[in-house]
Image 1 (cartoon, one colour):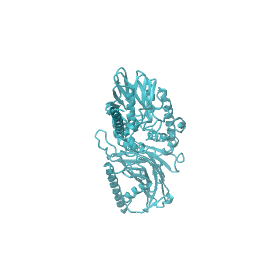
Image 2 (cartoon, chains in turn yellow, brown):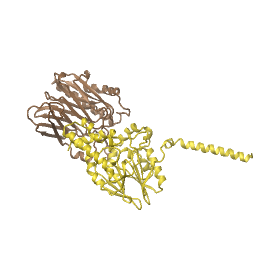
Image 3 (cartoon, helix red, strand yellow):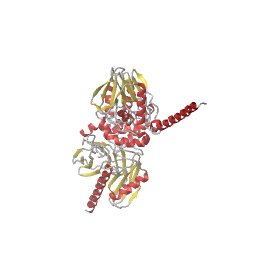
Image 4 (spheres, helix red, strand yellow):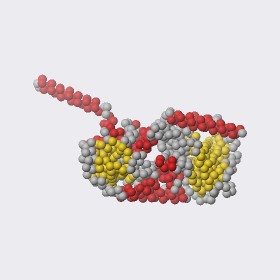
Length: 322
Length: 280
């Protein structure tokens, strides 16, 4: 063996060792990123339209907060993401998945409403240069609840997942309607009156007739009420009239058919309201009424036992003023 | 006279307690991240109970007063609480019932004064519960005894979580009242006449920030309430921020004659609300 080849071998070994060391060095400070889930699984559902299907679960450490559906629409010039996920980790995994699908600049993040599973990843998208777009009521709603969300979700999903989570409000507000131009296609935004929350926003892609319904549509996963039951029921017809063939509901199968995706929640709301109105008319107090209201729907929904009594409590307090 | 002085001193102590605890909450000194347990809730109560009741002995679970609430709150900003009084165990009658939520920023939720011979044996309302906490009912008999009942509620964020789900509508209808009457025996809780009083009011906790100014929105709540039949007091309340948005009180009472039900309420802005209804 020549001295030269010996030197080369040593060099290779050294270089290899250095490369390994560099790898370790790289891995140590980014332990959080290394522990992050792999890029989210984005499914193409129409031409230039993608969606991630969240789990029908409550936010938890084990699921990294990945419980709501997310969307992506890619135009000729730019792309828009719909919602950012329930943690910074999920936001990063979503952004990585977007980068794998398109090299168009990510110009917009559309926040469909205030809930943590939809907005805890917002900082990732702000840092990536996206403009955050939301309902005119969203900044006030986040201001009022943000501190509470940050504190209470620390308990629910743990310190590690809460790392880097910020409440990032929208900087572009939708008062009624707004059109985002992505180049060759537009995204039509619409602000709704109080329903699921008082800051619900939908995004329609007319070119593929795909609707991002946010949490105005729940399929399979029991709807949750944090706004107005009567307001939600009153706007179902207008939602159904949107010119869409498929939808990405806030929670549920991706894609779902539109407007059939509204059928189950419409039936649940009708049952819940009818049960509560009867209880109120019969003088049944709140604490007792919420134990049975809506129960006939129990076998039709995921997470019924988690959310039905809470929905019934809020709805009772709303309906008793009728 | 003595009673009056005692009462007003107690009221002042209570007001001071409410103010101090509220101030410490605003400065961020108060509730930590750790969840309360039954024993830490008891310790909290021990730390302020003499400010409210002096050093008077307190009898636990005598059956004179009972309290019920869900073990786990569905909505922390809207937790139904039922308080029952057994008149047979209080031959001298009950003067007042104080409701306390240990872990809340202002633990004294409300003090209810019961009208003499008004026959109130059951009272239910809805409260905010900010953390895992005991909710207590402490009844004071006319003889001056204190009887306590308590129930542990798992909830979080009732006070700091904004209760107003639909903020635009909330202020527009402020002060509107509704009285429901339940016929005896028809789903009612006892043989006596049963009423439910509802008041539209945001009952702001003072723990929410104004989105524009970043300042805490001043607490704005129904402070005093009296419900009477004619001139005869049924129930009066001195309340705080722990009473839920749109304060709601359901109670039974022994009706006397046909005089109207009259309600007067005052909030912390000095606004007065009143209404009256004939009995069915």
